[in-house]
Length: 586
Image (cartoon, rainbow, N blue to C red; front, side):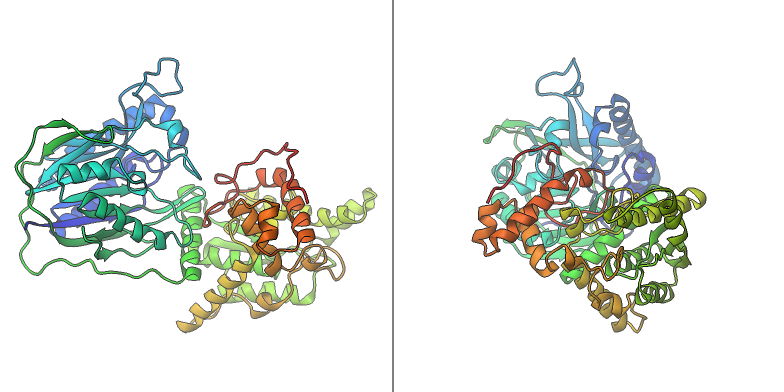
């Protein structure tokens, strides 16, 4: 049986940076060649970044993607890498955008992969299954392909597929079995969700059984707006054996020698097969020789615990949002509470303490322990800690306006927002807001106050998970002999907005251990009232919580973006009308 040394390049592209992404391909192809690779694969839409959203509709952008692909092929050959087959995702089109007046049936923008070799484009494949759920809108942007491309590489028939093709039965993987391929390369831009890595391996095994072939699965890493990609690239044999698996949330070159069945007599260049798909065959004339020495083994890295996984996802999502948008630093309010403490620790891990400004904004209702906890966090993390008392500004408002009750509470939050935005304008920081998903769900925030900011690193984190993350991060620091970043008193104290004397979250909300399961069922699981009551929740409490969630939609529509870690994040995932009279009645 032939052996191919495969290199899966788990890298971090940036949307719209065609030149920078092409340089990534060249640099990592060099690394692959130095490792003796005979075939290297890069993620979905590697050249353009993913997802490109409505950039698809710009013909100039499509043309630039195609031109960049041709330049990349020539540059790889000029770099001395011409014999190395390189699979690269890019944006293609064989017709006008589907939204244009001159659109043509069955033609348009394509989510594509090309195999580059000896300065040219040997083969292309257009994604067949287009996801249109959750964060995906690919039916809006792309036209599905109807042809499976099989390329003979080093005596092995290799099929090219893209992301969603793996997630659905039938189509390319069924055709791959009919074509008798030995290897299916699947390039991905698969966003992270908690526990998705537990689903991915069984899924790859099912597709390997369906195709009767080894699968090389390569996924990108990095953050793009609200999405974060964890990598988790792998190679799975036809019998379901996991041969090698890459780490999560880092760039990584996974190199592994794989024994594959030798291709049989080559059939016709084109053929009609089942599932409404055609087959196109191509061949790579020569590849680098098998390298001497021992076989390459990429190893199998086991996924980490849930809290560690989420923490790494949030750190990567925040880091890339700040760096890719070229913010020099971030600023956030430090209340002494758990949410701002976790957000600050994430920011320090993502950017380093020298790029994080934490501001204590005490009012007359701020307790001494909260002020002390905020200062303690500043010392533990080493961030730029500042104190800006708000009471004189609040008093000025109250001296000129007759305000009372919750209006005064909201005024304090808005004064804090004004100060943070002023620091942003004056010094160039990105303002981080720190409301967790539970608070966003029930509207427990002040518009233009504590909700102010350009990014929210904990937007998709339920309150109960916030506590778990804090405990994990402190334990992780202690295990490495470092100072735990989050004060224990911030973790242990009852949560409070401290906007009025003796105020606690539990004055107006159920305990979060009771509240979160209802919210998770309603928001993430789309359960209605009856389903939640059947699950064992108190009917009166369900009615109260659902009313709070429904009434807060207008607030969430104005909230900052934040890293998605759950199956249904507010924003891209969960899209409900603001004006909406439907209610889950008791």
